Amino acid sequence: MFDHSYMHCWRHKTPIIYRATSQWFAGMDVKPKDGGHTLRETALKGIDETKFFPDWGKARLHGMIANRPDWTLSRQRQWGVPMAFIVHKETGALHPRTPELLEQVAKLIEKSGIDAWLALDLKDLIGDEAASYEKNKDTLDVWFDSGSTHQTVLRGSHKEQSAFPADLYLEGSDQHRGWFHSSLLTSSMLNGAPPYKALLTHGFVVDGEGKKMSKSVGNTVAPQDVWNKLGADMLRLWVATTDYTGELSISDEILKRVTESYRRIRNTLRFLLANTSDFDPAKDALPINELFEIDRYAIANMAALQEQILKNYEGYEFHPIVSKLQTYCSEDLGGFYLDILKDRLYTSALTSPARRSAQTALWHITHSLLRVMAPALSFTAEEAWAVFATPEAYAASDETIFTQTYWELPTVADGAALLEKYAALRAVRTDVTKQLEDLRTSGAIGSSLQAELTIKASAAKYRLLSSLDDDLKFVFITSQATLVEVESEADEGVAVAASAAAKCERCWHYRADVGAHAEHPTLCGRCHSNLFGAGEKRKFA
Image 1 (spheres, helix red, strand yellow):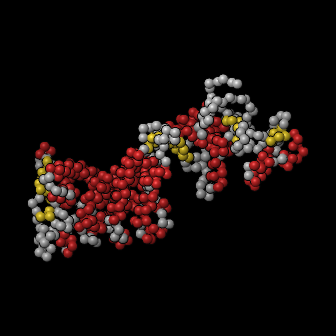
Image 2 (tube, one colour):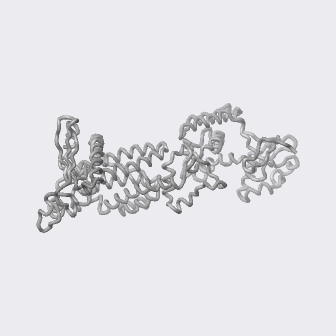
Image 3 (cartoon, helix red, strand yellow):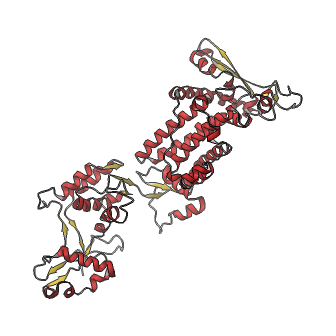
């Protein structure tokens, strides 16, 4: 009996005693016969040529390769891939025809399975020499198995669909000493280079309190339960919203927050799909220079967002992408552009330039949005694509959005200026909206459309607001907006009063001309014009 306090098996929790045995090694510092680089030198050079996400993985893998001993390839186990060597009984030397014999054994295994090696009688392989030789009983290190998949996959089973080296290897942070490591060494031996161009490392899933998941503790979350209850896209969105470079926390509370984010994106999509449902781009789309100013701004804004998101995708930065999409749907679209657009979409004549301008912008935005969200919200994007694409486009795409490249948005000539202008407008609008909300809370007005605004502005702010002319009221979603120029910032301010005018039952604006047309006493003048006349004149919003 041995009494010892060190080394317990990590799986069985039972004591381990080491014993010295002969092993097979891959030499890290053996100079090849052709005088080339050693395995260590080749591997370290390969690391320098590899991209790492996150970049700290490079130093970690470099340190492991630089300081590791020779690789022990053999294991004394009954199970596993046999090291099908034939060795001399006395000297332990390999049979001189080892490469040729290995090929013969491989063909036997290909035909009859792994047991062919165990059942093999050496006389059938080497004849009379069998008396002096024996079969090697060792099995191969499993890391050599997984580490050589690049050869069988990229150069074998999937060589038509892929290429060597792979664009990316993706695994958990423990694989710097595992699959990343053994793949690098086997490919350095075979190819003199890594089997990958880049390595991406992620952390491990923990519960909401940051504790390691364990069945015995009962804090595990089964992926099947999440997608059965919430849908697969909710699980995908949780992954995409989490910074994978550290630990990934999951709990019912976290998933609840993800569900709310998903609902915002999905509701935005529903609005876009609904308001482009009667839009035929071949007949109804307007040229970019004929669009209303705010529509051109919206396209320029989407183009800027798409450019940022594509850069994030290049760097495998997923959580900033989802954050930008959430902000875009809730603030840029829901809280600003679409909020302003509703009046024009719902009250303008069906085929008027005002409505077609809005729909043209929405059509381009939807094309772009579906594509940038598809890698994360795959099922939602696929479902929306089936509704959004024209029958011709849907058929040409093989009925999937995943045959599409990113959408090329039309170039807005004054895009940079519009982005700057509307950023300033949105800042003013935020201040005005707060005052309107205070009035609504107090009960002075029922909705913002019941309000009449008087804005006192000086210098740059006056020029900014006056550039929208009579369309200014649509930006603030009020029935009236009057602009007064003052001399200094100190004199600036906003006055809000409840309208005394009647409410139009169609557009809900409070206007003095409600009932001006006797045949339609509940309509305002602009609704009457939109329905029965030439339509109201708008060019900005």
